[in-house]
Image (cartoon, rainbow, N blue to C red; front, side, top):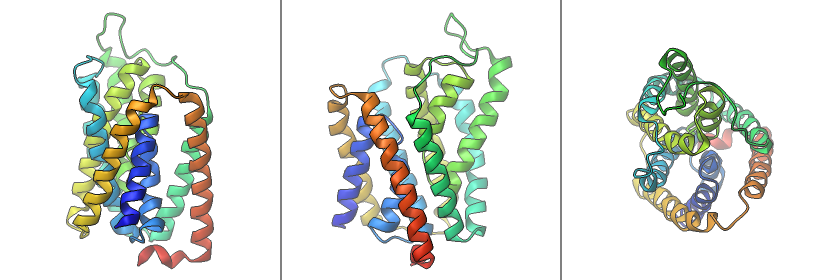
Amino acid sequence: MTAAVLLGLLIGVLLGLLGGGGSILAVPALVYGVGMPLRTAIPTSLVVVGFSALTGLVPRLRTGQIQWRIAAVFGLSGAAAAFGGAAVNRILPPWLVLAGFAVLMVGAGLRMLREPSEEGGACALPGGGVHWQTCLPKAVATGAVVGFLTGLFGVGGGFLIVPALVLLLGLPMTAAVGTSLVIVAVNAAAGFVAYAGHVTLDHALTAAFAGSAVAGSLVAGRAATRLNAGRLRRWFAYLVLAVAVLVVVLLVIDPAAIEH
């Protein structure tokens, strides 16, 4: 239980400092730090991801920076695909799922090392409206990909959603961050429901992990404005890459460890 609280705080602090992406470490933390089987760690991670996203969303509700209609289209297509990802997860061996997760972590880490861009698609109209003829197919397709990954790996997908909203749909960064939190919460909820009838969670441990993550996120969020966001993101990218390498090494040494 102590390990769950401490690791939850770490995940929450990363979420608070970075505004997203920290939850990608939740599954490895639960598997190797807490000793939880992968099949249980994924839905547990989705609980943490969902509550963390909702916590980050609350202060943005009054800012008017959330594109609710885009979030609905993106989120609903992702929610449907999350069930497919969960179904695929159940037929794959756990070691293969975690190996794929390590590959995803490498991709996320490398993307975080790139300089963010504000230039992209022409989804958002100058007057604040949405060009649905261009946006709808992109939002549905991208949302489905992110939702599938959410169900398969138990990640929120914020590290994929924000650049997709900016580069493919053309949303301003401020609107993309707020909108992504809505989408992450919807995807996490759908992914959890897809797993609900197939695994039994340790409710006390899940509550401890999620609660400490939310607390860490709230505390760190206040400090984030005083720190260099670019430097934080680079160091976090290095951490994600290092954890991905560690996951691969541990899989090679003892692939059965993630099943018990």
